[in-house]
Length: 274
Image (cartoon, rainbow, N blue to C red; front, side, top):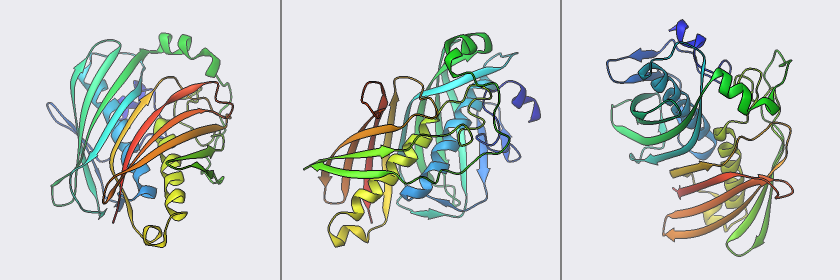
């Protein structure tokens, strides 16, 4: 599998190790042996694996002989199984449409009983190395720190009015985004998603006591990214929400810079308390 690293724009530590990667005739599979958690704070690992495996699936399906960059602009992940915690997951990706500039991938996530756990669909914009370097020239960073760093700054949640609140997200650093992509650090959409889920969790902690004690699970998530998000820039999200059923809440999150001048994208998230 080592040759794949020569052609895909992602790298360690963002990209997962490929030891458990299985290449089939029409699919690419990846198996995790670590415990996977579908609750809000554990969903990042699922989203990140889905996005990276989708890139690998396109890479193997296309006739590529040079480094290529895959940027997921639309992601939809939908929960199928009611299980909350799993001891390991199997990801199965299949590319079903692609050209030189666009690609679509389906990724199924199965639990350790081989039952469908999540289903996902991803749409990518594809760049060869020259096009990527030209389009994202403003992101170029000559020196990338040797060590990655965890995301540890607290975010702020402010209740504004009924059915609306604001999440203030501290800037992501180069260290945190290392591997996405090499000398052109771009904040991964799944990192923004993770902080939004953290904000939604804090929002529930501000609600009535019966909601505070619930386990929160992502039932459906859709991302629509307008433009690449740079590091070292504070972000803000105005979140509109509704309780759409007895046990389901819908959150529509618009991501901007802190001055609300640049709109980076939208996240539509359905959460179920258990």
